[in-house]
Figure 1: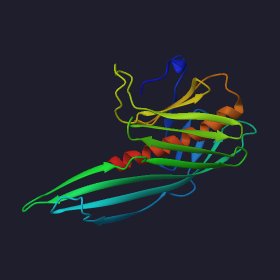
Figure 2: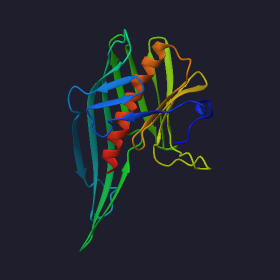
Figure 3: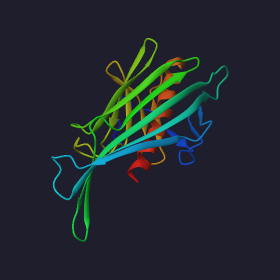
Figure 4: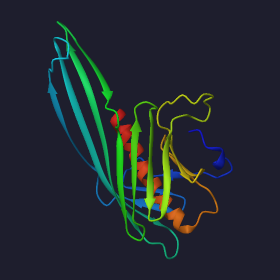
Length: 223
């Protein structure tokens, strides 16, 4: 992913265990899922008047809920628990021909989306919404008086233009400065600016873990 200049001199923290789903690790933080994530969904289909002849319109909803715990391998560190709900909605138009069918699917504006709640010594929330026009995600995380802007990075390191491609990761902004980033493409990496307070680091570790799991869910959705 293309890294913000604010983080250019910051060493990346490799992520381990991302493919196993049960436990992640980056830097001094350990992340565990007490139980497997759960999925459900629904579908409605019909032939409203505006649909062409020999065609059917359907809307599909997918939901995935997961819980995890984050703790630092440091004296006095306390566990932060999180519960997250990821949602996607898609519209499909299927046209039936004599010997074949054609299907066109689009993501409904405002999706996919992520909502998380953090509990423990640090209580807070994280929300992310996809913008249909810009093809980027944006939202924020709040822990008491601390508020972080979260936005997706849809360009890779070697890309000259800012044309949005896939989600390569996310950057986290405090005031006007990018203070952390999470690469969700591949094995994953995390960056945090040195000089952040311990409490800020703990908040960012919980947000980073949520984004890493969310990125994995999006990979499964696109598979």
